[in-house]
Each structure stands twice: as structure tokens, then as C-alpha cells.
Image 1 (cartoon, helix red, strand yellow):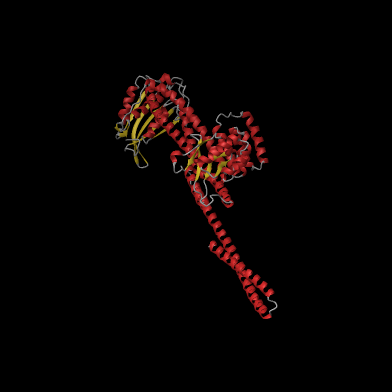
Image 2 (image 1 turned 60 degrees about the horizontal axis):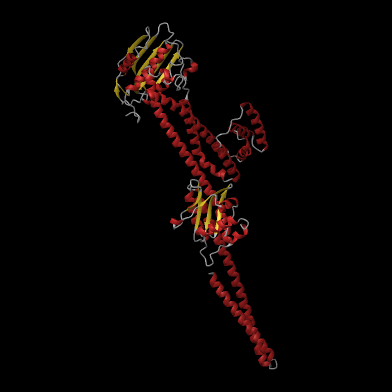
Length: 606
């Protein structure tokens, strides 16, 4: 369209010039023939006509030029609108991409489309190799280049985040000959006409290279450079978000893998502990376990629950970080805090006697920084608990920007790291115990089937015959009950532990008595076998009643029990989809075991 207008304009200009030349020639003739009045009159009329015609043509030419300018302006606006629309679509597309390589592909594709470039490549940072690799790979990927982080030109780009073209190299790097040579080598290897470092928070995420433009001279206009600046800004943020998201996913997967591994170890440990307690109850392991075991299993259980809560909160709110991280100040403070809290695991704890004073001082400083009273109170506590006094201003930045979700994710991240450390420490203690138990015993894998509960109790009484002190009255109140689908060996261990506890409680009883009863009972419309063990021993105080199920908790003297018993008993009963309850008062204790008579719908039970 513009070429046609130019041709028309040129034709009008040529015609107008010819008219002017003709007019000038006629004027000369008119002056020459002034003596011939008739001829002079004719030439004058002709001059008038030509002059009028020229004026009309000149006006038409002006109109054409005006139309040409309007059309150019209109096409310019249309081009800008088209670019802005495509940029919005590009931004929207990047938001939905969480994979760094996919982000790179989107960036290079859009640059080639928007700037009409022959090629565009992002050299993405790979921590495993310590180098920047091309993403996506060039067409001839057999000879693709990568650049190490210690390359002088790469280091210079990291410190000088600016657009670089070959013609600028001599001017900006003339005082750095080695860097200049590496820069020239970089441009030659990548065949780049433009190089832009993708830097965020002083960190070099990648290097964008763009080859020549698909045009006659292959150069880029100022408009192209302005558009590229906008594209780079959006691309850098998106690439950072994708990388951060991947790091969180990797961290989550690593934590999940560790939890699964620890769970597997705990399951193995539990099986070993079950066997060891079985042997201990028979007198094989009593002296070896004693009270040197504290409560690692309880610590692991609590830490695992806490870790699950930490991971669940992070998973549910990780997407809520996006609005806050768009704020570069919040993002910078969040990054500093995250690195400090997760990497610096050797921080010493603040002396408890100094905590109150420090918290008050920090709170006052945060209030001066514009943080609300409640947030300052919460923030000062967080700073003191984690000994990050040097990052007080960064914590204040998050609270001032109402980034409470960011703070909660930080707290859960710290909690997750602490829980993993506790789990690791506790498992080391458990493993130490298990190794000792394995030395004396091996795992026994019994099968499930229908079994006579009463017969199992009687066999246990026979085994414990030597432990039942002379004078302990064993009263049997057996009512007929159907066979129960169970692992009889595991249930025999339950009876062994409950009887051992009763025997221990009867040491000081004047007329020691144990009553064992069996019956059936319905719970929630389902038939259960009820097995009751009662004794008239010392009883269980209210203070420790809720703790008797805790692993390694025992009231026995050193060498008389490991504290594994009741915890294992409860685990076995629950594994059989049953329940166990205890009623106790001074001079009386009663344990009630409920076991489903029908086969439970449980994958753990074959």
C-alpha cells in the first residue's frame, strides 16, 4: 500500500515539475514577444491556464502526502496494538508454564516471531554441570556449545546486566583484554547479533542470544530493541519462577522420599522390636534392653506428623507466593530469608535468658519500621527463635507488604528442616537398638487365619508358668466365642505383655489375683470378641494413664522392662482392626481387648 502511494506521489511531483518548467519557458517567450500584442495575449492566457493547473496538482499532491502520513500512522498503531496483544498472550502463556526448558522454548519462539529473528537461544544455568547450556538445543545439536560459570565474559555479564552487541565490545571491554577475547569468542560460537543476560536479584539465570534479523540488512531497529527489553523483563521473572517452582518440587520429592525411606525403616524397626519384645518377655532380652532406650519412636512419630503438616501447608499455598514475589523487594527479602534458614543449619541458639530482652528490642525496631504491633510481636519471636537478627529488616519487609503467607511458608520450611533432623537423630538411636536386638533374635513371619483365642491365652499361661509367682490366683471366666481371623503368634505376644504387666503390678499385693474373661459384644452393629485382663495390683495413676501407650515408657525398675510392651500391644490390636482400653484406679487395673470376629476389610491382613 505504501509503495503504491510513493509511486503516485513521485508521478505527481514529476508532473508538477514539468509544468513549472513549461511555465518558466512560456514566461521567457512572453517577455520576448511583448512587441506582438496578439501573441503576447495568447501566451499570457496559456500561462494562466498552466499556472492554475499546477496549483490544482499541487493541492492534490499535498492531500496525497497527508493521506500517506495518516495511513502510515494508522498502520503504525495497528502494528503496536498487534504487538501489545501478542505480548499479553505471551505473558499469560508464561504464567501457566512451570518447567524452565518449556519457558525457554516459549521465549525463543516468541522472540523469533516478534522480532523476525533467524534464531534465538537461551543458555540456561544447570547446577549439576556448573555451566550454561542451550535450551532448546540448536538444530545441529551435535556441536552445541556451553559456557562455564567461571568464563570471564559470563562473569562480566552477571555483574553487568545489559544488552550487548558486537560493535560495543571494543568500547566497553577495552580495559579487560581477556574478557574481550572471550566475548568475541562467545559471539562467534553462538553466531549472535545480540546477547542479553537474564539476571534477577544479582543471580544470572541464563543468557539470551539472538542472531541476525530476517531483513535485507539484518539489523534491528530501536523499536525492536525496546520490544526486546520488555520481553527480557517478563522472561527473566517467568524463568525465575519456573526455576524456583522446580526447586520446591525437587525439595518436596526429596523430603517425601526421605519420609518414605524413614517410614520403611520404621516398619522394619517395628517388626524387629516386636520380635525382640517377644523374646524379652520370655526372659531372653530383659537384661539387654533396660532403660537406656529413651523415646526415639515417639519423637519420630511426632516429627513425622509435624513434617506432614509442614509439607501440606507448603503444597497448598505455594501458588499463593506468586502475587507477593512479583514485588521485587518482597522477593529479594524472601530469597535471603529462605537461603539463610535452610542453608545455615549450624546457627547457634540464643541464650534463653537473653531471649526476652532481644525480642523486646527487635519488636521496638520493627515498630519503628512501620510494622503493626501484632506482626512485630510475631516477627520478633520468629527472629529470636531462629537467631536471624541480621535479617530483621527483611522480616519487616514481608510484614509491611502483608506477605503473611510468605512468612508462614518460611516457618513451615524451617519446621520441616527441624523435623527431618529430629527424625534422623531418633532413627539413629532406634537403629542402634535394633542392631542389638538382631544379635539375639530374628524376624518371624506368621500367617493369618482363624484361631481359637482361648487356646492362645492358655498356651501363653503355660509359657509364663515360671513367672507366675506362687500365690497369684489365675481366675478363668471363659465364655464360648467364635474363632477370630488373626495372626495368633502376634496375639499371643499381646497376652504375654498384658500378663507380664499384671504380674509386675501384683508384687506388693496381699492376695494377688488375675481374672481372664472372654465374651462376645456388638460394637456399631458388628460382632467383636471381648478379652479382659483384670488384676488387683497397684493400679495406674491418672498422671501416667495417657502415657502408658508411649513407646519406651515404663514404670518398671531398671532391667525389668524395656517399655516397648504396651506400645507394641496397641499396634498389634489396631493392626487387627481392634481396640484396647484401660480402666484403672488404686488397687485395680482392667485391660479390655476388642477384636472383630469377621475378617476385617484391610489390605494389611491377607
